[in-house]
Length: 492
Ligand code: MV4
Image (cartoon, rainbow, N blue to C red; front, top):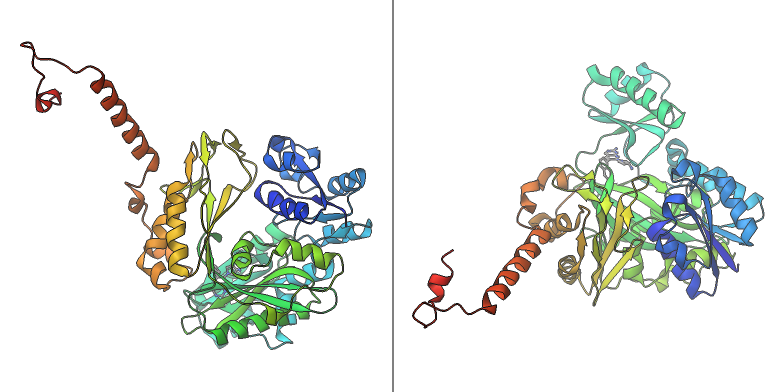
């Protein structure tokens, strides 16, 4: 592998190319017309425009991307996350055209993309699952029997769903038929597949996921967990590793279950197995994400493993460069997604130009970003500006560094989640580690961020400095000659 095409944009394109560069591998960027001036385009050794701004006409066009790889002589494609990263047909098309797909096989993607087949595979390996079904529901009568057996509330989930899409909570028998029909029609229009299944509804769970990697020779290792409970509308905002609630025994059990799920689909490459954990730390398999995730960085920080380097290594057909026993957790890492969203207004996406953009620096701070000062955040893609990752010897140090880094981070022109993040990690529930997926719902109020307007503070500071400078120029004199009392001077 001598040249990698990165089929993505922004911070993740930068992230992949940085490792490629370290490994002496050439890089090709593909970009839409909206991204022509982005840093990832300049960073690549070569770059090809693949179409208009709309993803459907650029980053989602498999044939254009493969064509660009052929035209530039690239021998591998890294899909990043989102876009085509979990598209089985893309993995197959890349491989069929004689290129290496830096990711899992089409078979693994397909099997894990369908939640019912994922559950069936996991069940064979005795992976714990929430009580429910592992077959598509046949009709409402069957759903009713199952719901009564496991007890309300239940969740109806779309087999083709994931990340929260196509889910309906059902509180009682009376709602069942209606909710099931809604779930099915939603699933049909969103995924072209109306298969649904039932699970017992776990009220306020923690979301804990295991990072793993496998090679093509059947070797696997897990890189421990990430705690991802702080999310809104299924959009994660803060992730950390390790989780503050796991014991070494539960960590090992979850890691081994995750590897079992990977084995169940003959997985190779980097992947993540998602679990729900209840208040007693019972954990249940939810789904597997067959890509490198946004939050992979926190796992890198605590293990010292470069996940992209290892992805490339296994995609070349090499054996994993480490074994489970080589891995241990050192320190603590917390990631804040710096999104162009307004935490004072329901986290609604904000657009605009980064009039000022100064990322923080210093010990234990990593910023993965893809924009520069003066650039507009395009409306066409994900509103994430950057990922701010703080690393410390322990959780307290990581929190303190994150707060310090937020204070150093200077973004002007686009509303963002920085101050929300600073508030969140300083709350009692976060500090004590006692929180779940309802954290924002339960504890956050926009008024908590009032008075944390860094921009307003800086304007006020600048103004007062300016006024002071102006006034000290001329030392006003009293009519009689002597200086005016400072008290009288300030009496404006
Ligand atoms: C659940 C659940 C409660 N009970 N399943 C949401 C995303 C998808 N991966 C599965 N999800 C959930 N499945 C049962 N049986 C609650 C959620 C859920 C959730 C899970 C993880 C992180 C955030 C969440 C927010 C709302 C609901």
